[in-house]
Each structure stands twice: as C-alpha cells, then as structure tokens.
Image (cartoon, rainbow, N blue to C red; front, side, top):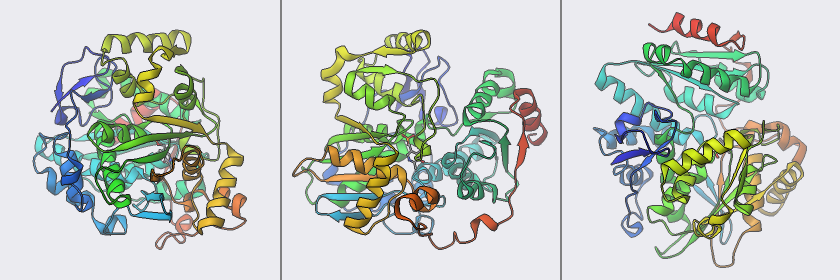
Length: 460
Ligand SMILES: *Cc1c(COP(=O)(O)O)cnc(C)c1O
C-alpha cells in the first residue's frame, strides 16, 4: 500500500514511513492511494483482534509481525471484556457501541493502544528513539500516556492547559509516575498549547535533532485503528451481511467519523454516517450547506472533547470530494487562510452520496438526552455520547439499525451528570480515589524557546 498527500506534491510513501509523522512535507495529510475492498461476509464471527488483523493488514502491509502487535494491543484484560467494544442494545434497532472501556475511559484508547505497540516495534527495528510532543485538552493526553508508559525508546512531552481540565482528567494523566512521561502544564489555554507544538515543529533543525514525533488525530495509524470497531459494531448489530446500518458519531476533529467513512469505502454496508456537533457547529453547517466557515476559536462547552474550531481530519474527506485533486485541496486551504471559508455547495450531490447526515446538540439538549436515555433505558451516557444520541435519533429511519458510538464514560464528566441527574456517575472499579493519588507535573510558561530547552534537558 502506498500513501499519498492530500496536497498532491509530497512523494508517495509506505505505511512505516508515515507512521511516526504528522503532516506530509507539502502540508497535507497522508491517505491510502486506493482503499482495499473487504468482503464483510468473510469477517463475521471473528474476535476483535482477528478482525483488526484482517482490516489493518492491507493498510499496514509493510509492518513485520503486525498480527502479534495487534493481539498485544487488544487484550481483554486491557479493555475489560472479550468483545473489547461490546454492543449494548437499548431497544430493538437502537444500540450503543461501547468504545470507552479502555485504560482512560474514552474511545481514544482504542487507537492509542495500537499506536504504542506500532511505535515501540518500529523504533526497536531502527534503533532510534522518539520524543513525542503533544497538546491535550483532556482525553488525548491521558490515552497517549497510558499507551506509551514504559515503552522503550519513547519519551512523551504532553502539554495541557494549567487548571482547565476536570479534576478526573487531571488526576488520570498526572498520576502516572513513569520516567518516560513528562506532564507540562502550560500557563494558558488549549490553543496556546497547540501553538507551542506548532512552533516547535516549525523549527526543522530542532525537530530533526530531537526526533520530535506526533500522536495527534491526523496520524493515519489512529484513523486506521478506528476503522475496526465500525466492522465490529456492524456484526454485533446485524444477522445478515446485506443489512445496512447507520452510525451516530459525536464529532470534533472528524477523526472518528472519518474512520466510519473509510469503513464504508472498504465495503461495510453503512447507510448513514450521522455527524453530531456540539455548540461548535462548523461541520454541521458544512453538511447542511456545503459551506465550510472556520471559527476563530472554539467556545467552551459541557462536551469539551468536541470543542474544536478547525477539524483537522476534514481535509482527508475533502480530498475525495474534489476527485482526489491535491492542487484543488491546496487552493481551498489557501482560501480558508485568506477568507476564513470555502464553498463546495456545487458538490452537493457528491456530499449527499458520501453518506453523511448531521445535526447540532446544545447544552440543554445534552442534559435532556442524558435524562431521557436514563429514564427510558436505565443507562447513563456521558455528555459527548448524549450529543451523538440526540442527533442520531433525529435521523433514525425505520428498518435501519442505529448504532450510537459511546465515546467516553460518564465518570469522566461528573459535573454535567450531576446537573442532568442530580447524582454522581458510577465509577468503574479501579478508579476509586483516583484524585487522591500523588500527581506529577511541571507548570511552564507559554514560551516556545523555554519549551525547547525543557525538551532538550530530558532528551539525549
Ligand atoms: C476526541 C473525542 C471526541 C471527538 O472525536 P473526533 O475524532 O475528534 O471527532 C468525542 N468524544 C470524546 C469523549 C472524545 O474524547
């Protein structure tokens, strides 16, 4: 399998060559040159790890020992059940795909656990080391650290906005004592953290010298890993291979739902990919109007992991929409820089054919959905999942099973659960007293030069 850049001018690369990278040298994102078609009928009945091997093999065909890495990443002991992503049926034809039973209780564990194995194995083969620099508003950082803890050849420098994460999120990340993890709490916002990552990566000499790597959501391996659970959910919710299903996906950076789009392109019978945004509704507007209008900054909401102003993976989808014309994508993103928007309303028919539907869920909808799901089905969903359920139900069609992706457990977002239900969310075993564990982090200024010195001091 060869990978090409969405901006069209970077050289074609193999999977192992793009594994440790963020953006392609031309500023684009890597995508497979063509997607393999799978026969769903041949995959029914496989375990999660078997399914992951079958789906990922053609996409990662130059990784030695891929099967063993996949089996290590998706162990029942790590994800709490043999199913790894169990399906809960709320009523006939309405399901929750539980993606949040990994070490940090959010779906990002599913991709990060595999990334940890792939990174460690690639570095062991080349004898190189890697310094991962990332920014988190909450879920990504802890999923990355739990996946990379103790991994040989890997150090993690994770920037988080000082004092702006929930107590649970803070505890989950800062409690890790592994020597290869460095929690850097930045005096500033999440946007400041992201700007610092960009500033360090813009210094090509520093980046090369200290082998700076990325685990952000544009990493292709993360997208690929997420394709697997769409297949898993499909088989759990259907009995026959012709049956179409729809998925409802709480979205921010467009990584999760884009994986669903890839699954559909690989042959999974998906009728609709229902995209839910919170108050940050750039993507909903796009799918309703064909206009993409970037906002200056995201507004803070009670589904914080979807507070994204610019959906980074969206470029991969647009590349397909414009007929895989990299020059056209470059022009569109130049226009976005210049005018803050671009308009693809002329491609409306193609957008419709790609299977997307969309909607927005706001704070009051979120609370009402948490209450309604609890009353009707006796299940407590987290605020992000509630956004997905709300919009999913608006687009539900008779005779088409609807699978709502559960992207986090309610225990991570106790404040909103208290507001909706007047009580504390349940905590899974092992998370009692998390906030009381000793925490390890350093507070740093939002200053790129100081950050580089800090990285250099721990890297060798
Ligand atoms: C990251 C995240 C999302 C958004 O997923 P994208 O891939 O960025 O669209 C939704 N819910 C939760 C809980 C998350 O952590």
